[in-house]
Image (cartoon, rainbow, N blue to C red):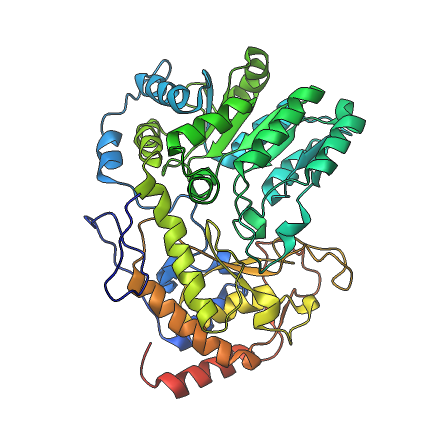
Length: 477
């Protein structure tokens, strides 16, 4: 990884790429932003992209591809069965992860569906370092139960703990010892999405896999966010190892690996790999049933070609470091200006601590959802609520409320520039100074309370916030 010092000593992330293709974006007036968020039911998922300036909803499927990937897509073998492109991706997966058997799917959620169908039965348990909504939903659909075994340090929002995604290994071992016959598999997530994209250490991953082998339980590794996690292992735990060496050491310990190639590999698809013929056959039937022929599995062949290149690029330290460096820069700039974020800076994006940003909004009025709407009104940036809407709690007056109440500002790779991050910082500083104007939101009577549902503001606080914006910024957007 190149280390560049600036003579001015001001630390800035330095892009290790040049821009070849650009896409126009829009910054609508604040009045239109209020209209748009109302039309969307105060749900950023429902905003249309032409009303969004910085799309920081997710880093899934929105990362910029390289010229190598785009060129590779033109070489795809579109054969219905026995495609050479499938063979090429299979070979790359074996080279990097050491797994010979490969099943494609159209995205990561489809991989979770296939794995749950194959191994989860009614009454079984799936321990994991932390809950992720789609993973838990697939497990529960099959009659199982997902159980979070995160080390308590992971729920400390502000700390200097380098690996907050680690397992509570004593609890994991106790569960494996007492409940092994009921455990479908142990899911190991790197990094840990819902606690702020925080990494898990290689030591904790290897220990979890070792315990699985000791007690005869399948280890399943969700590598969707592994790219950022590789950077943190390299810089915080094992600087003596290369990215390729770290990848292989972790992969060799796991029975099954799956990932969303929308994140790992800069493509659009999903991957399941294993060396177990028995496990492969058990999963293969569900790929054929729900995804398509086992050598394309719902994934575009052209995307397979792009993922081959993207996975190889992921072994480049300059590639895997860029996301974390941009996120760290954004987090540091916000902290310097009194805005609380999840620390240390993790992967995936910068996570605002909503309960500290808007402490006057009760949990029953969804402070993270309210703040996400306010961020959009103030800046045109679309973030994502990570709190009581996305991870519903049964009673807002009882602990835990879903453990976190965050607004995620994802940082898609190679998409936005430092100047755009500086613009966002400026608008968030203004918003923090006017946070008292932000009010709560609620579900309308009779609503299903689903993360894609519509909400409404409590009062006219969006219009008041926009009026203050116009007063302070005059004719500026």
